[in-house]
Length: 308
Image 1 (cartoon, helix red, strand yellow):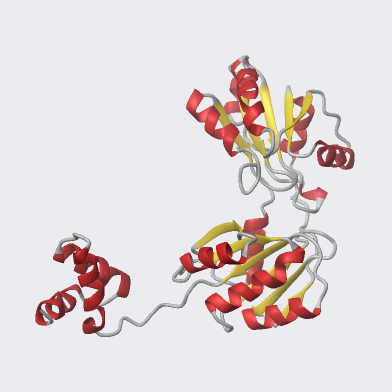
Image 2 (image 1 turned 45 degrees about the horizontal axis):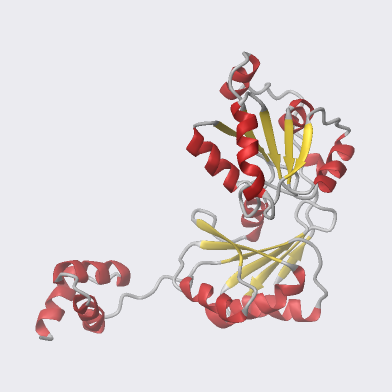
């Protein structure tokens, strides 16, 4: 098991070419219809705020913030003055406020949506607003930026070519176990979020479901001064969590399930027969089981017929 401390990313080159104006920006400058901009905010290091985020905070007609106090601290750190109207928009009031916000955009306003950290609508408020805007034919665009999911994935040392984001696991043990059972055969690298005081029971549940030797990483305080990435097996990470006081924002990255050996065709006859009993045709049942178990369709078909 190993741990590292990472420094903040270096600033972009001063000689970089200026970004082209986005089509939505051009339409707004020409007096076109309103729009919604999902703007990513820093996940820890305020220096990661983009120039486009700063410009939008200064010029937008409305800034919808998950927590207006967090927004106030952010703009103070950036030295930005928000000229537009600031409103609170979070999971407890988005159902009531979405329709009015869509009306404001429909009337020509630019609405910027920000959450406490990272990209709105990804494990954060914003999806309901986007869903409504799409249904109404309104313009939705984004100012990309910091992402805890991608940062943790990149630092984990685990495969990054295929991954899935699972957010927070259920708090109740039974529901958490059920969710993990659904992921038992997941081959992709998995990224989770977790609160520090629930990290130990979460790692214990992962250990019990996926096995002690599954590779994983605990990423905490990403981009902040005390950023730390702990890599190892689930057994090692559980032992670390049991003996350390864990603080800060947590992302847990877990390697996917190892590739299973295909086994003998005869071993999978019962699975085919179970599908047939559900009304699935023989050839379709054989194809489904063969794809799942990586055995030869021809050999499995023959084994099913031979067993009758």
